[in-house]
Each structure stands twice: as C-alpha cells, then as structure tokens.
Image (cartoon, rainbow, N blue to C red):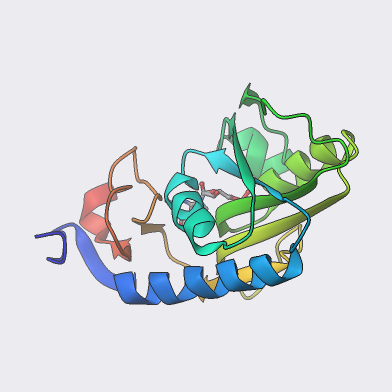
Length: 183
Ligand code: 5GP
C-alpha cells in the first residue's frame, strides 16, 4: 500500500531504497569519525524527525539524541536567518561533540543562525549532517555540511519528514508535488 504513488505526487526524487542507501552511508561515516566520542545528534523539528530516526539506527557507536523546534520559513528566516526557538535542547552541550541532523539544506540561513547560537554554548565540535541539499545554481548554502546525503533538484519536495501544510511527512519517499495541489 505505502509503495503506491500518492495521487498528489508528480514524480519521485528519492525512492525508499535510495533513502536507505544514503542513510546507511552517512551512519557508517559518522560511526567511523566519532568512535569513542559519544556524539549528540540534534534534530530540528519537525522535518528532520524521520531522518534522525533512521540515522541513529544506522550509527553503530554509542550516541545520544536531543531535539529543537524553531519557527521556520517565515519572512524573517529568508531575510535575516533569525528564527524563534520554540523548544530548546534539554542537554548541556558544553564539551560535547554535536551533530545537527538536517532534512534539507536550502539557503542554510536557519542553520547558520542555530550554529551561532549553539557555538556560544562551547561544544567540543559542531557539524552538520544534511540528508539533502537543494541544488540552486546561483546560490550556495550559508553553512557547510560535513556530511551530505544527496542533492535534490530546485523544486518543492515533500515526504520523508518534509511537509506541505503539515501533510505528506509520512510518505516513505521524497517526491515533487503536483502544481495543482498548491495553486
Ligand atoms: P533554509 O533555511 O536552508 O533555506 O531552509 C531549511 C528548511 O526549509 C528545511 O529544514 C525545511 O524545513 C524547509 N524547506 C526547504 N526546502 C524545502 C522543500 O523543498 N520542501 C519542504 N517541504 N521544506 C523545505
């Protein structure tokens, strides 16, 4: 049933198998690089929760998790990168090796603001693991991801945690929405 294409989806960008291969590779890389470091994996809600759940199960070393929630995609975010913290971390990150798990990196403004904020709390290290980066020819993200899953075309995509008006997060693949859905 879940393998049937949702009627609102125009095309599939990443299949279930593509996603699994990407996440397995990221998990292996992180496990090698953070051996003995007990990294703290942070997901920014809500979009990254699906990726985070898969990523930690692909990581074979001890690690812990925490979550933040910010207000996203408002006009403030696109212009200045300023975001409002709706839920802060419960973990003290001073001296910890922190990895931010991000669903999709577009302008990177949201993350660059969060990174400044988290760096002020003096983690031992701070890096980004982006499941996907949006390919936009005339701009580069404001932040560098140490771990990159894949690149997606410059279209509005949904599924695998990503929503349109809070829908489609549960699709097990990443796809492009049919234009009539949002027009
Ligand atoms: P940025 O600050 O990098 O421009 O935006 C990052 C956030 O915007 C992502 O974490 C995601 O929540 C949202 N976003 C960016 N592009 C897309 C997209 O194509 N589809 C969906 N559903 N959300 C997106």
